Length: 268
Image (tube, rainbow, N blue to C red; front, side, top):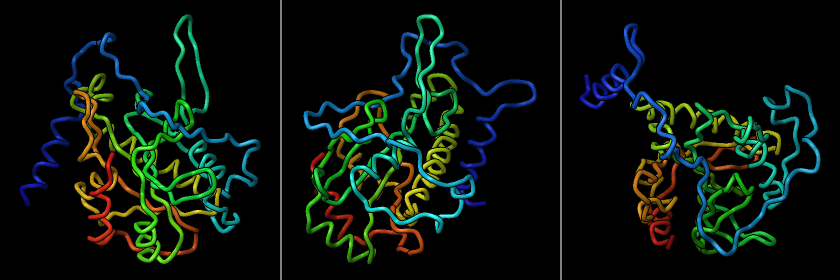
């Protein structure tokens, strides 16, 4: 067996629950060090997104059949709706003095280790750039500008209008409660978030295509993680980078070296 495959199987065996014991963890809830399930960047030019005024039209099967929906433009209002219905806050609950939020995408223990980043082309009232989605505020936090020249390369590569959304994990948010099972739970939450994004994209007449030919290092480069100074335990690991495009079209599942090199030059 390949040595990397052996590591995967070993990790799986050692971090799962067994008949005679639970997977290892701290064994108690360290409330003083409870992670914040929301990431905030200190920016002065926060871009608030509009909330949907009405629910999308359609029946249950419309979630699975994109052809039932018209292709909507990639504008601020529709991108706001896309994020609201996939990663946004769905409700607030309270018990006594405690109050907590629920989100559209499920999460193990409601810990939400996933963060989302968008790379958007220029549009009305929105500069072309790399943005972090702040689900608490339902807003975009600018991280870097993306030049018109780079977007021209991207359009030529995909031969259609696209924007990107990437997901990352903060492992500490899960390991705080679940110990050694944190890595597998982060992967589980990535799947939950991807499913929510796919359903939401379909309601807009869009398709979410994972760029699965990119390496972990490539995704970290595009999202600027390799150039970000993280606080202790708060580092983000790139999980997946997707392109959003009109349903019915097929696109390449990678990015060429010259585009990756341009992303490495962005200042975050």
